[in-house]
Length: 200
Length: 237
Image (cartoon, rainbow over the protein chains, first blue to last red):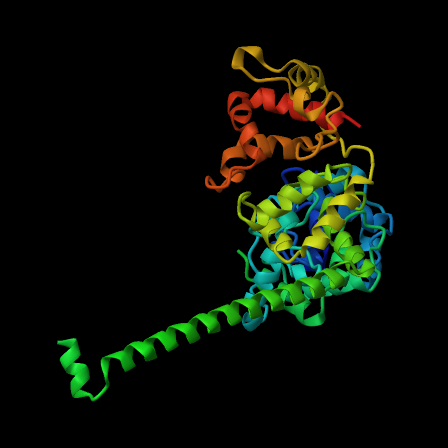
């Protein structure tokens, strides 16, 4: 009985691997992602939510992992291997698939800090030369094109990502984040991550 | 009645007048002194501010802050909103716009927050520093509209009573004084500005500014014409 179950499980995996990605929620490539990112891709820490993320951003990140330009510890540990034999076509299709799933907000930040985070997000801190996040990430932190959606991501994921810019990871990025985020204090980072985690 | 009241209180009339007079004099002196004190302290503060504002490090940090959004070489950036190119921009125009944000003549919440903390000396320093930069245009605009845009830029749209853009912005679109450089500007930014002109600029009717000149132009151009001219100027180096 046990053997039969194992056999059918192996068979099921083999079958799913054969089916093409487009239109098949249970494809092999998708399942390789959802093992860690959650069955509906809503994130399962430390793996972030993928559902509803911007397509171009997802695709760029997959390329970044496979080319080792995104080099923070978890990326090295998991994503470098996960993307080692990923074709550009599959990366593109995966990005489309996950960008079209509807995201659920994590809502796991510190509510007391959310107001402070909102203020920084919308206005920046002009006296300290900290720019407003809203200019690039949008009024509802929805992102656009290659600029990621931040609204509703997990608090600890957002916090770690914001810290990592200042720690020198992902420094080949050709955008303002390494400089912008390295200006932020630990409390400001916690406030931003809290505010963002509640955005629907 | 008043007089009888005063008499009842045993205060002679001329004494009351004298006291009132003295009060008025002392009030006037106080006012004058207060005014003088305010002026002096304001002058003192202005001196202190100016001295502090021209510190090289402060200016450099502030310019780095501008570059976070406007690009490391001031070439502009496509964020959620198009963030304009500042490189090569006319200092007088930049100064006028920074002041317009502060005075809410030009509506832009992000830039209001940025600009309202800037001291006058800082505004001057920022405005002049971006003029020195000359990166290549950010690009990315559809090339097929260039020819139509060039025609509008150089000849205007006579049927719609729109003058040639080149007449004020210059044949190379480099601008002059308060008239901005358009060369190399992001096409999406130019489109956004021309389509929202009267909602964004010249918002204080009591204090009309240079933006008034563009009002009829922005209104008379059709959306396709705006797009074409935006693509053309974005291609200019």
